[in-house]
Length: 200
View 1 (cartoon, helix red, strand yellow):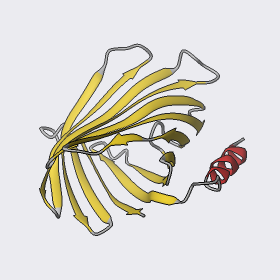
View 2: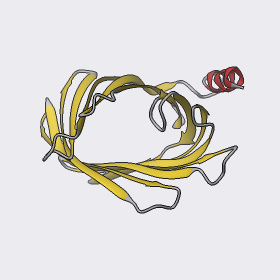
View 3: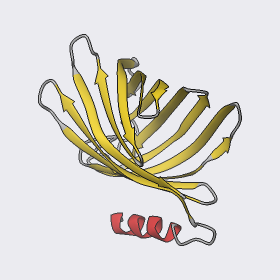
């Protein structure tokens, strides 16, 4: 089944009109206070017609591969925004499906983004969770931006839990190195990585 999904996502790139528009790779490192660390790689691709696809590992669940497909809708102006509804397939420790979106709004040096996602397990429909990652940042200079970050999780209809934090990211040409600190009063955990993207 996994090989079939990979074949489908590869064939998606060959559809007419799918000239390269925006693509990139990233490698994030989640470093926890209790030494339960993890690596989260991501590869994404957006066509000329704004069809979006992505593959990532260890994000929704440890040892789980997720594939996502969607289409971006955007408008540029004094206030710019983009919305990308997504549907996904998860395989590994968590086998199921997801629905979600990526949304971003930019006004001058300020940017607000959020990525909510709802996942359901195939064999155990009662095993499901909601997760979102949101950021409010300011582009302090061409070389870096900083701001607030928030992760929110709700598992199996339990109460929503939130992890606040802040972000500082450095950028150079097509590369970006972010640093996230969550629950900063106790340095509960932080995330760093390296991101590369190219827009044509």
